Image (tube, rainbow, N blue to C red; front, side, top):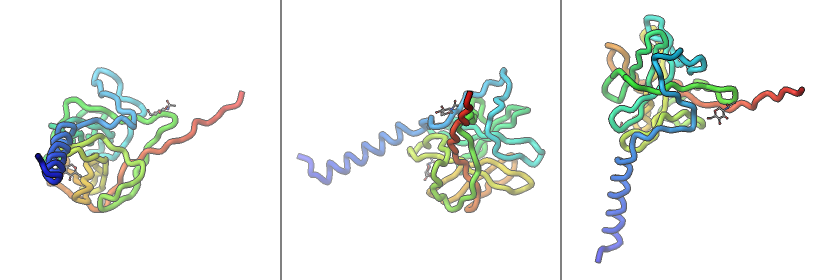
Length: 184
Ligand SMILES: *[C@@H]1O[C@H](CO)[C@@H](O)[C@H](O)[C@H]1NC(C)=O
Ligand SMILES: *[C@@H]1O[C@H](CO)[C@@H](O)[C@H](O)[C@H]1NC(C)=O
């Protein structure tokens, strides 16, 4: 017979295995559309910042290994890049976040990995933790990065620049607006 302690240890191991298997699940609370380079860039894509060459950066997400990570997309070139806690990469397939008449997005000041209510999650990472979207200013740019709550930092790596880590940053939150009722 197994002892209660052994059984709970087994349950813990199984739960962790399951978490690993389940990692990389998209969050569908918000409206994410698969980016299609043959179509016009969505008008209601959510703006996140700009790079040092003046291109606007829009909010997207991609799957990297078994993690879902925030992506910044240039509308003109459709180039989409993202960073993990170590590296910067280019995404070939990605989703774009879009607003609608009753759902809009704001950037709010935050710090130290604080869990803002209504923060937009792109999905889960390989350890099954929710991944959030942050941004910060620096080097004549405002770049979208990845919030790592455990490290209490917004990590941003863009182009050839070194990794930057911010303990004060902005985080993307959703706002539900009532539809204006128009009487006849
Ligand atoms: C906006 O998107 C949300 C989330 O998908 C949805 O619940 C809501 O009905 C949408 N609003 C409109 C006006 O389409
Ligand atoms: C997943 O997110 C958690 C919480 O931020 C973090 O501690 C962990 O390192 C992340 N795992 C990976 C593989 O990025």
